[in-house]
Image 1 (cartoon, rainbow, N blue to C red):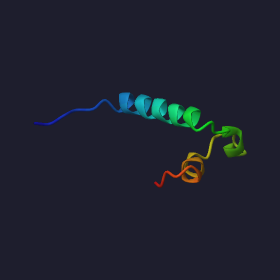
Image 2: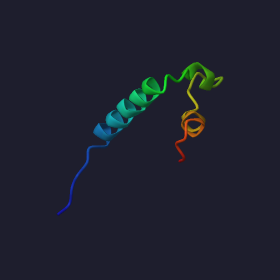
Image 3: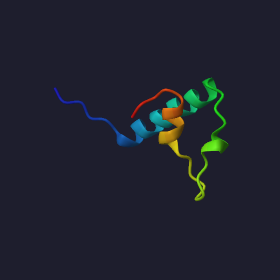
Length: 52
């Protein structure tokens, strides 16, 4: 049996989980802002014990 996953639903769920993680850990995302206005998620996660 093959299961099909809507990639957009996966992205939405991943972003929701990331949001909850940031809120739960009380992370100040401003310290991870890059010059182009994006957030360095890899550094943020690694600094809080999540290895990619």
